[in-house]
Length: 180
Image (spheres, rainbow, N blue to C red):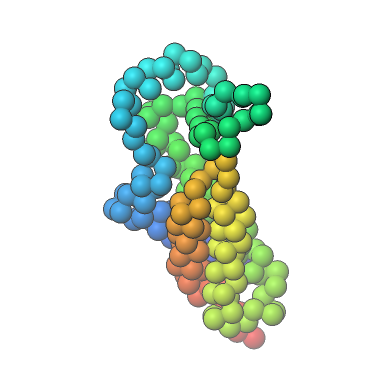
């Protein structure tokens, strides 16, 4: 059964990465959500490059008045990882590792409850529920003053569920019960 768990996890991770690749490279999904442009980008980049030296997250609030923060004024968040474009290839390998480890954990969880999840349909639902868990916890949990707008969070959550459904269809087939 260990071979099935490992094979299922590796193939599930590959499917998760392939789904992300198609969505992002072919359709520009994350670019649409995460990589908006500003009208004077080179000037803003210059200010940030001079001002932000240490990796981390930086919050920019409106000025505090006598009544506290103005309710409708925007709050901005800038994240700096300390890395440049030269890290992109290594970053993709790390993402593949995270995808494979996530799928291995999910396959192991299925193995632990395998006596109750004995049909392909139930195994597939198990992986869809894993995707739903990730979507609710990470994507919908990212909505807020320093997070994503609701529309972006819903798109990310939908992508998460679709990705885990596709990976789950492969993993559910590989995690079939051994013949007695």
